[in-house]
Image (cartoon, rainbow, N blue to C red; front, side, top):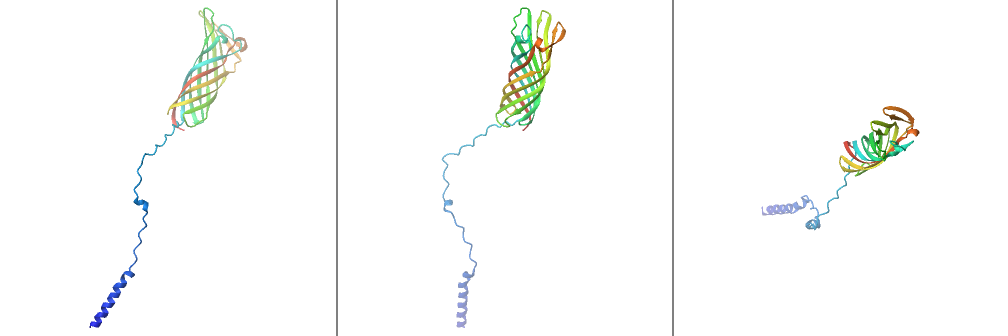
Amino acid sequence: MSRALAVLVGVTSLVLAAWPARAAPSAPLPPRFAYLDVPPPSLTELPPEPTREGDEYPRRAWEGFPSGGGGVPFCRGSAFGVGHCGDATTGATVGAGLLYRVSPYVAIGIDASFARFTSRSTTTGTAPYSHASWIGLLVRGYFLDRGMLDPYVETGFGQAAATSGYVDGTTDVRTESAAPSIMAGAGIDFWLGPYLRLGPALTYRIAWISDVRGCYAGTCTTYGVDERGTVGSYATFSLRATVALGREM
């Protein structure tokens, strides 16, 4: 009996000794990096703020622009004599236009200009005058589609008219002309806000005049332009304020 007990104890001891070796090995722990135990360095100063991007001023579909400035007339035909074109000198001009910008680089629309020139005449008892006008279609080309500057060139085709003369007492003596005309110009605008630009413009308008009407006390006769003379063209230097509306481009 004691021998059997001794055998049982021995077998039990062998089983218990072999049991840890048969157990599944545990998963190894992941390696730990030493730098994770080091505290982050203190910030001595904050990084600089990102620089602000410049205003882009996107172009808009519709543009309307009043303008004002000065003009210089150029004569065709006989220029001298009281009430004739040669007596006219620089004067004030006003204008207005409306454009539809079909793309950031091209716009089409209408334009009108009115000029009132002063006179050098010193004839006693007379009140000389001279003025001209232009209205027509306008095509404008731009160079930039973003940014504060907006330079452009433009051309157009329309109708020009000019009148010069004098009033002697109650008698009005004048010369009138009207003819097809073209114009060309250039300018540069500066964006002052999302909807407003301001800038100078230089424009030249010239008409194809062949004859004029000379009127005296309400009775008018047709003359050749070389006989009577008239303002055949004029240049303007103006300041334009443009209001831009509609969708961004």
